[in-house]
Figure 1 (cartoon, rainbow, N blue to C red):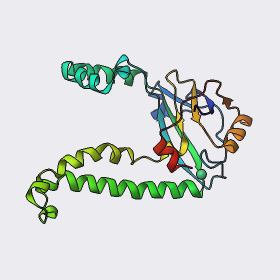
Figure 2: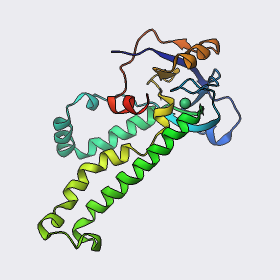
Figure 3: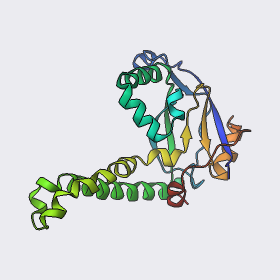
Figure 4: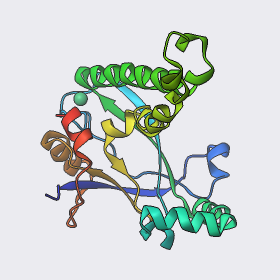
Amino acid sequence: MPEPSVSFPLRHVTTPNPTELQHKHWRELDAELPSVCVVHGAPGTWTFKLYLSSHPYVPYDDLSLPRKILHDFLRPSARRKRSEYRRSRKIWVKTRWPGCSACRQYRRERRALSLVLVSLTAYLITGPISPLTEWMPADLRSSLHLFGFFLIVPAAKSLGSRLDLSRATVPENGTDLVVRNPHTDFAREALTLGARQQSERVSPPGWWKRSALR
Ligand SMILES: [Zn+2]
């Protein structure tokens, strides 16, 4: 099911901050963000800073995973060109979001989860040579790192919770900042502050995020 979203207009950076003006791709919000948090619609008691950027499209994005791997293998130099192209078109926005006590609790739990996942991954990957695994049978010990490799992606993904708490993305054209499926109280206040209801609906985030953010 697609979910509703609101978008905040962006403008070119006008504040005389020399470090930011060096980047021609910087934008800033042209409207105020609501005083309630995105996820729970509760009054913000603290704020968090978040740098958001667009993800410029390249045809490579449409390839299936096996074809991406094949493509990377056959044309390793294309990867650098792709990242240069993306970097030259990326739009950056510095934002500050309100968070409530439930947001803080969520962030705390995510940090604990990250710590467990990252430690476990490190333990498994270094398993074959680590003194901590000497008690294991040799067969199991020598293959521990294989299990560790499976955990690298979930461990890395678990590190950031701020994107989950803002639900914000910057579309490629860089004219708006889109907040997907915000709490109704956040959306209502956003509309009074100059945000627009998105006519085109966006697809929802993955089930693992939704279940954690109810
Ligand atoms: Zn909250």
